[in-house]
Image 1 (tube, one colour):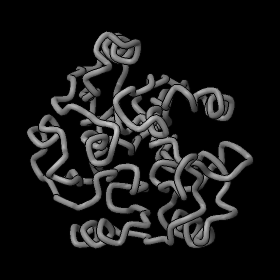
Image 2: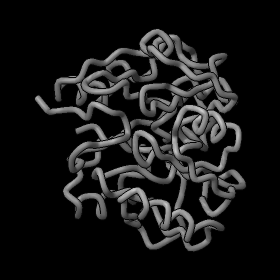
Image 3: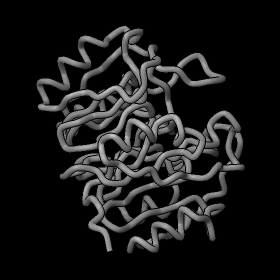
Length: 246
């Protein structure tokens, strides 16, 4: 039985395995394996927009520790079986997802510190029921919009989310939008293009050379005692987050 990370998205030791959307696995696996990280693929979600169907944060929510909520279509999936084999406790979402926002975003909540941030109108009831402190925000793609750096530090281009985070004591680097590729859309989210692979390492799917706030991001990470790693040579791209699990 593996020791799952207590704090979602914020590993307290080197990551040995993480969940990534299946179609991104081949692109990211070589770099991740060089860091000793095993990729567990998240299958396609057939109920959301096809352009986002491999975004794992629309299908997975890590409560913390061994507790995971998966989209209901993942019953009997290899991902569910793998998590249970590793010792996880898996439950399946209540909400029916749909192909248009916000019906696709019921699991895309952001757990950070002692609170969970999401739009209360669309958040899956499993998440609401398991949360002692829920912070209502307008953003449905909460996890994708925010890149957690530590329990009290984060990066986002969403001004509304930034205000709520700061009100709750989180140090926020508010960046300009842009510089993140998301096929089929004008731009992606920074939270969907970055994830921790160690307490002091934040992995980006690609380079930030075209991001308008590249230097600010790298300076902020340095101030937080975190170094960036760029997994591919191309421009950073939004994969709908990844989930470091143990």
